[in-house]
Length: 243
View 1 (cartoon, rainbow, N blue to C red):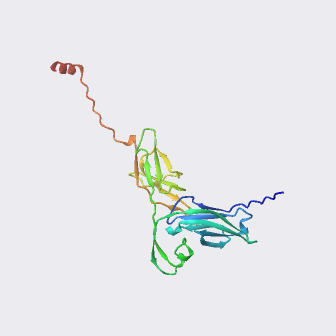
View 2: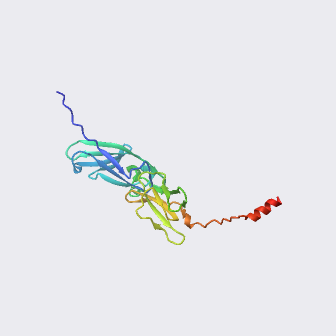
View 3: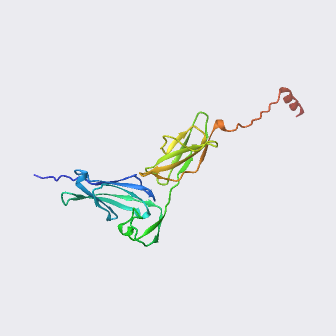
C-alpha cells in the first residue's frame, strides 16, 4: 500500500500596491503568509537578492519606503516555526525602482535609508535625486458637442495600481477637485480647464500634476459670421442681358 505524503501549503509573498515598477519615495507593503497553522506560530524574515534583509520577527507585514534604486531586486520571505526547526520559503517577487542616487558622505548613519542592504545602511548616506513622475492628460476632443460630452484620460509611465484625482477650474473660478472620480478615464460635459494627478500606496504617493487641458462647449464658442448674398430676378435678368 502506497502512503502519500500530505502536501505542505506554499508560503506566499505579496506586495501592495501591485506594480511592475515604483518611484523613489513610494511606500511598498510586503506581506508574508505561511498558509500553515496560525500567523502567531511563525517568525518571519525577508531576503533580498539572496541576502538577509529583514531579520526574523513576529511581524508578517512590513512597509518599506523606496528611498533609492538600490531597493530594486528580488524579494522572498521565510518563515520559521516557533515550535520546531521547520522553515518555509515563499515565491520570489521582483521590484524595480526608477530614479537616481549618489553617494555624498561616508558616515555612520543607519537610519538615513529605510531601504537598502544592511551593509550599505551602515556605510553610506545617499543624496536622492528623486524622479517624481508627471501625469499626462489627453482629450479625445477639446470641443463638447451640443448635449454631449468628451472623454479625458490621465496616464502615467507605470500604469499599474494608480488612482486618479481630477481637477477643474475656469477663467473666473479657483481649481476644485471633481468628487468621486478616481478612474483613469472620465467623461465631462462642462467646459473648463482640467488637470489630473496620480496617487497610490499607503501612505499615499502623489505624482506631479498634469499640464492643463482646456475643454470648451459648443454653446460657449463665438458664432461664426455668415453673409448670404441673393440676387432677385431682375438683377439676374439684367446681368444675363449684359453678358
